[in-house]
Image 1 (spheres, rainbow, N blue to C red):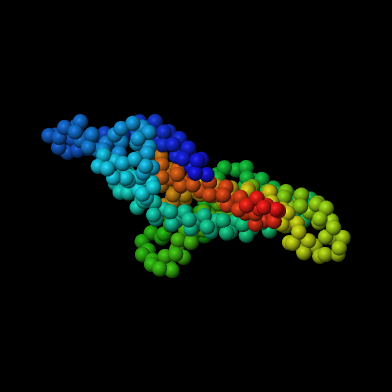
Image 2: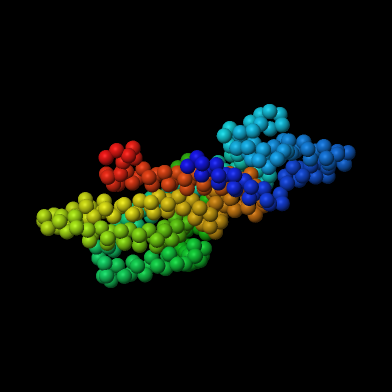
Length: 329
């Protein structure tokens, strides 16, 4: 994981440095415009050293990581907790992403809880009722949710729930002109998150429900399930204690991957609904060439994906007793 993280960090740093963006030159030009007596070359060199942009590309990469010193001998990289300074906001990236990170974590935590509480039992139900009318209806609905683009579904749900039924607000995270505090402010935020949560849940139901259904169908046809039924065990006990455990084996990696993809998938949701989250900050950074913010966001998604793979490995050991992390029988 560390090797992959180092390699990916180098690749994305090189990619972002291919963009025609030079914040040292921009700062020098702003100073020259304010004071004509300043020398451009001197101010440009000053800002290069200030941002750690002097030297070779690999040296700048090591400075960004915090493995090489700046001109003044200090270490101010990722390993020291310094994510850089945002050009657009004029303040440290860590300060820029604090509030958006809270909104994104809350939105994805609620979406995950709601999606799993529906997806897992719904997939198991469809597997037990395979071929029935209710199974067919669910499959049609999941295909629609799986096939349609997220922004199209979001627009349709906005038209239905916000315009026609007037149940939820169209966008934002708080009511305009209302200075709520404490628990009332939290409830107001949940009300604004209602429509994005419905969209995220509907979109996620398509893929995961079908995966759970297919895994449960395979599990219900195993020999151990036939043996359990032959022993006279109730169908509920057979499904919950035997079939469900076997069905989890192929679902675990997909489930963990789906959980990590929720954060990247929320980029579209946050922009459509005007939510001040990491996805919106990332999108704004890309459109405004704010590379420090974009790099920080990209590293966040990379670490999230790697952590998801690690969690999947540990989850295998929990779900399947035959798997031993230490390699022992």
